[in-house]
Length: 342
Ligand SMILES: Nc1ncnc2c1ncn2[C@@H]1O[C@H](COP(=O)(O)OP(=O)(O)O)[C@@H](O)[C@H]1O
Ligand SMILES: [Mg+2]
Image 1 (cartoon, protein in one colour):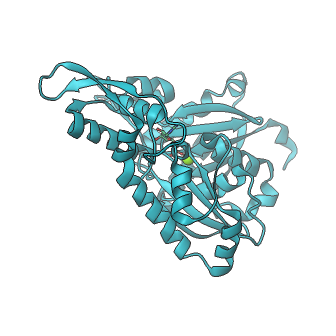
Image 2: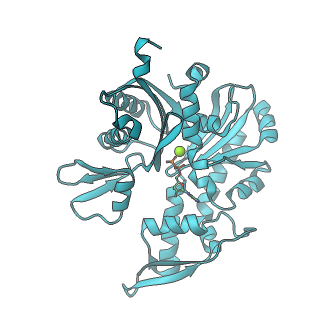
Image 3: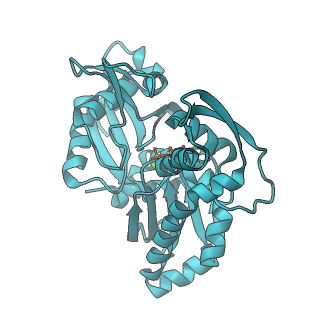
């Protein structure tokens, strides 16, 4: 903390595979898809976030949309830097400033990213005036955001089901004791639905339609207590080539997603089996916490609970648990110093 500290702005960033969120002055000021639209001929960024998402699946030969962090690794460094840059520039309170403020940032990154990628994120942040840049691992930020006291000598299990990856971790004493990153999450669920519609109904649907189906009637089990109503799904008939509509029930989606959910269950079971016994004893009492957009899939909590014989809790506002935790870390840097990535 120095003399010019009043000139420093503080921001917390959750750089997710599907969504990027930013907290500034205790408020979520950015909540946008991690998508970039690029001009194919010049390679220039045409749009990011929501604007780029609108173009998805509707681009022509001059524009393509990419998700630079799609699988939890950085596929395109330049595009991700430009994306972060534009998101930060778009923060309303910072736009008004006549001098570019120095920034103190905590950035949450997917656990799967490598040292080289981490350095790239840090350097990108420094280039957008990040004078103090700290990185934090996703399960850690999720745990803090959920309200778990991570500093205690007590084991807690966090499962964060995002877009590209599911991060499973056991946390105690401010550290990750064992963890696993599975490349099965929301995106795979969406693709499962596309595949199911194609093979079972000869219906070719786009990614946006499949995502809508997932959110509206998606389920992890075929016996929901309060089932959603059937949904009409439109796409292109693969046989006739004509536009067509079919009625779909949540049971069909549960079938479509079953194999992928099994893989997440396996990941959880494997992590549990690697957990030291004293921490396993804690988890027996504390249960499993779910975060991330994928945790909102109907019946997933119940299914995981049946599989593990443990209580399973979904975080409040699971899409924002990670950015909440990142924001709390930012405001309590001294306390959380040890959990930041060195
Ligand atoms: N109600 C819902 N039911 C099922 N999946 C959802 C729901 N809402 C969002 N999702 C999915 O959650 C994923 C995004 O979650 P998020 O935690 O933002 O991911 P990331 O942290 O990787 O950016 C997307 O795949 C999205 O389709
Ligand atoms: Mg996330």
